Length: 99
Image (cartoon, rainbow, N blue to C red; front, side):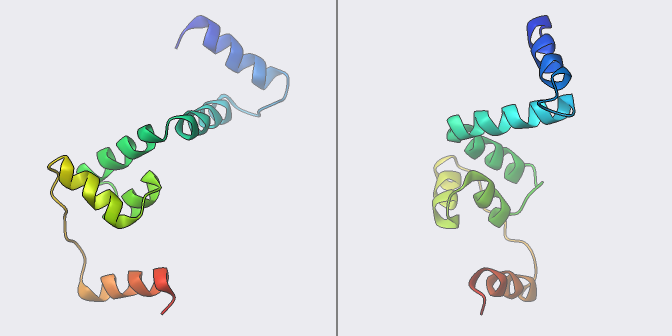
């Protein structure tokens, strides 16, 4: 991290706008992802490809419905992983649709 950025972060903490440097960075990342939603999608794809999140969670991170997210994966040649038991899938469906 550059000297100027470190000074800015420390200043924001020093004046009491944030309690910690981590809060400054987290807020900055949130603002970045709001301004550049394509980055949110890329993060979701990365996490999904590496098995860190489910298809459902990845689509949520990307702020896309699951079918849109599946289309993005398909266009990129990323295989959709089927995981979980039928019971787990039914439970998730009940949670989503409140059935």
